[in-house]
Image (cartoon, rainbow, N blue to C red):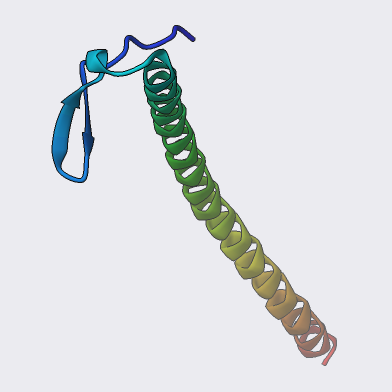
Length: 91
């Protein structure tokens, strides 16, 4: 990642200050803050991406589980019907 250029100003308590009028310590701290803001933006994007993937997976999982439960219920119903049909055929 490239080091961001120092912003020309910083706003503290609603007052804008040109950072060029301050020490190298202020410049360094502003640069650190700018990098952290960039990192945070990237991390937020990654979180959104992961949350979206989880939602998509949940939808797929819900459909698959529902389909499997339905298939099991149908199979169970058929297995209960099969002996009754066999008895009718035997009579």
